[in-house]
Image (cartoon, rainbow over all chains, first blue to last red; front, side):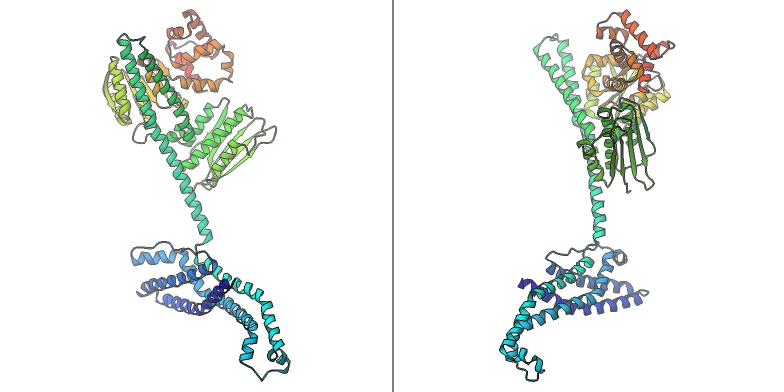
Length: 407
Length: 214
């Protein structure tokens, strides 16, 4: 309680001192830079001013972080290179202008919160300590009405009681004002939350894309590595078998072992092939989404009309997610809906995204929270996409998924 | 037979070469990319060429494209496609010209050496060799189609083997049937699939094709 109060008072006090200085610095440097920006001095001046302003901002971040109990992170984009490029990068970095806004605001905000907070703190402390200082510094020239309160012992203690009664209010108000000032500083001097959201989303999409690319790489590696090695081992065994037969050992127990090993390798390949299809279907890796959707449609055990042309370049993650949406929807139409026909459509949306729709004529009643559909939804949502399943009892079922594709 | 091979993985290329030379064939060229394959086939005019679907530089379906390019220039050049996986779409593209002399097999079929050599002979002789997996995909899809429903269980078995490219006598052996009954089944199948007996050599290819394109 008391350390917090002390910290708040110190913070508010520093704010009252820093505020006018920062304001004066901001006004003077902005004017000077604006006036001199048409001369050779403009750029170096701007760089120096920004350098100093950033040091001030750093101090303010520390001050705000000290009160808030969490460090306020540095929002700046890294700058490097030639002074010209540094200057351009600095003017483009919104953090530069948000710093400037804080330097201007620190006077009114710091002043207001600082003065109110300090006055409340000093007055309350004064009231609590009234018996001491009124005793030490007697004041004979008082208005008669105040005489009892100031110059008699019960009056002085009543004063003190009044101060103590007000103390809880002061103990709340002063830190609140200090936090108010600090949070304004954190808002302006810390990273822009909207920008953070945008960056976070970009980072997530990069991660998801990298993951899809990685899956495709794994598919290739299995194709060229494990699968190829197993096939090669099978060939060697086939030759060995042929030699055994040629040597008249067709009934030798060794030949049974060779044949057995070959069967085991075949099983391993079948298993591996199924695994690969689940990771990243080879046709998708080979030919892209439109062809993969056409292949899915062709493989379905009922007539499927597929419309998917000119999809252009799609991020691998979107391609894979869209593929699995279509595959799962078709599988559900066969397994659960008892559908007799299906329509699949994949097309680019007006804003460059991708929309896939699978419509069947089955009996409906699909549970959108079922594990298959729910897993797909999460996969779609990880790409900032949206998946809808409408499946009233009696049908029909429509599964739609939309993906944004920032390129 | 004089054979051209296109396979980018050394391990498999060497394995294939060993296997083919061991069984009395001659590998006249072994290359590792689509363009080299086209050049080698046009230069050597082999009795058969074997090509992997995925080849450099992009490792997508360059082998298939090279095979189709070769066929565009030499319509009857016998080509056997080997792949780690089979895709019905690819089979349909290969058979589209209706000329036969095409095979499309999973790489692991190579290890059933006698069947593999048999497939090589069939393709070189102008027939087809479709992987049982492609046929399985085909039948899984077509179980609800009208034409399929008209077929008896036995006729379906015969059609599956016929679609793989087996000859009548091979079908006889596989199903232990007498030659006349196999012929009767095939006649029934072709009439039920509405394939009139015109060009006798390619009716089998066309039967498969009719299914692939349905």
